[in-house]
Image (cartoon, rainbow, N blue to C red; front, side, top):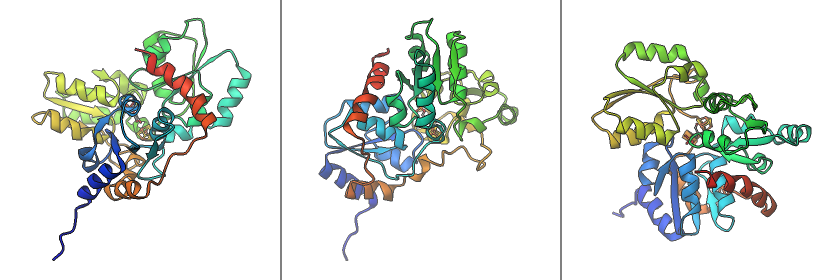
Amino acid sequence: MLATRSITEEILDLKKERRAILLAHHYQESEIQELADCIGDSLELSRRARDFEGDVIAFCGVWFMAETAKILNPHRTVVVPDREAGCSLVDCAPLEQIRAYRGRYPDHAIVSYINTSAEVKAESDILCTSRNAVAVVNSIPPEKTILFVPDINLGNYVKQKTGRENIRVWQGACVVHATFSGRRLAAVKAQHPHALIAAHPECPRETLLMADFIGSTSAIIDWCVGHPAEEFIVVTESGVLHSLKERAPHKRFHFVANELCNCSECPYMKRNTLEKLRDCLLHLEPKVELSGDLIARALVPLERMLAVK
Ligand code: 13P
Ligand code: SF4
């Protein structure tokens, strides 16, 4: 009888053949995270995409993250398991509206969250992620008016942390984090009164006010692992449980269900599967394709962000 190779073996063989690196965001399914060369938040994955040897990046995350990897690696092939792995925040910031704003207020600085399209990045002065948004805004001269695009909750959080009044905040939202309401969090806290709360800054203001810690996905994981407490309510996508369980198996973690599906999962991130990962390595599709001009323009604000410490 012929032994059939498992899908994991197929992926690992293809990875070698293609000289590929597998990058996975914390919100990917556990079986994908297990195969990854690097698991991280959007800033860590951007940095990793910049510093690697090989020909192909298989980006297990959402499309805007893979576009970022392509901007940093114009001569490498960047594939994503599912082309429909989008992001509600990207959809909230259409290029025409950003261009119209730029035309109207040419002297304002546009700070775009990395969760934007490559075209919107190219119209921006600097980019940021949830990890460095406060530092990025602080790097801009205080007298300059800022448009923060597109997440309303992260924008308001940055405004409060920097104490700057001259920040205008776009009205976009993440379909996952925006639904982690204070009411739902209070219900989970009532069930686990001793648990500490760690939240992602894309959550609504009333939720962030209840948090003991606010940070990016990796920062939340590091904080929960390093803190002496044993029990946490984690207010972000439940994919982070993979690293939390691995790094702190004795601790307890609770999640807040969102209003869409009674779970804490990003429907875009979860489109990627092992089968689709195998197929994208096999066919080198779906592949990110951006024009040279777009890459050159989007690289400027991206490199400005990467230079911020
Ligand atoms: P991080 O920057 O924390 O990885 O967040 C990305 C994201 O899409 C959060 O929903
Ligand atoms: Fe976009 Fe929200 Fe999904 Fe992150 S969790 S990729 S912000 S929809």
